[in-house]
Length: 416
Image: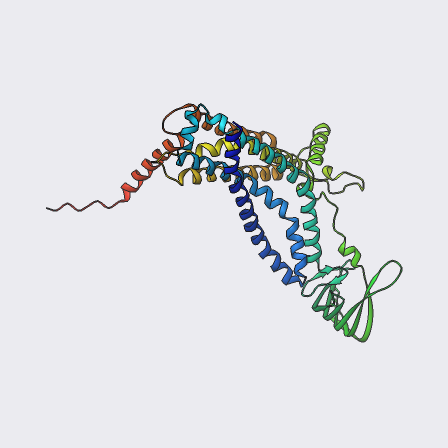
């Protein structure tokens, strides 16, 4: 029996690893193109892009694991049935229920690994990704100013520079604009600027050269302009660079934090889709996020992880084929089912988070239907001899397709 188990795993593992690699590469390339656009538009180094991409790797792996497991088991059983090895194994008294055990054990290991990724690694890497993205898009990079970006300063000014050099310290083509509540507009322009660090508190000033300061009052329509050769303008870049703490999004919470938040909301009677807009300084992040978002994310992670246990039970019947069956029908049907199931889970979680609908009831109902369907299909394939259920469904589908095609097929002309 150990020889059969190891043989099946040797058939599953190559496809699993190749699928993980290809899926991770595709997802990485798609995200890399978008990050490069952001980097080019904000004038940052490509090293920052790869730092952001590295923080997205756990998400890519977690998304590719179910597909890799499904394809590995499906193609392994397809090979066994296509080369008549499955018939030989069955004739020796080993049924499909015994043959699937190593695949289920592998699914259990991958499920635990997925829980580790989605429950504890992803929340921190997602937060690190968003922190870097915030620094890139805010226009403040390592106490410097990026070019071509409209920065909203704490003093009410909007700042933009045409060109930035030396990590954002030397600036050219500086423009600043501010509109008061009474309508007065103040505009600062300068040909050149330089960030000057000084003071024990680490404050930063922007020293402007060869510029103008203009004020316009809409009530009197009066304009005053002051030319200057040099002017120091205090800035608070440290405040601009401070990103929010982890937990502003439910996806940044670990599974333990989600469980604590879910339990707290149930005991305190907190429901609905409203987040805490005025949190206390020491308030845990799971109590700041909306209760519906916490519940939806908590149940979604549990359901998504546990669903991996039933993927081998779905993949094996899709892979078993006879000589008259199509080689692609089971693969296409199986992938369509798991993708549709995953999208239903995502939509349900998002809908429950936004509207306050009972996420637990809906998500676990979908999981129950998926688990029962996979189990029923597997045991129908294992216990009933003859044509596999998937091949019967394929024959019925082809019959329906032929009827539809025949309606639109041109009938031959009858000669008289």
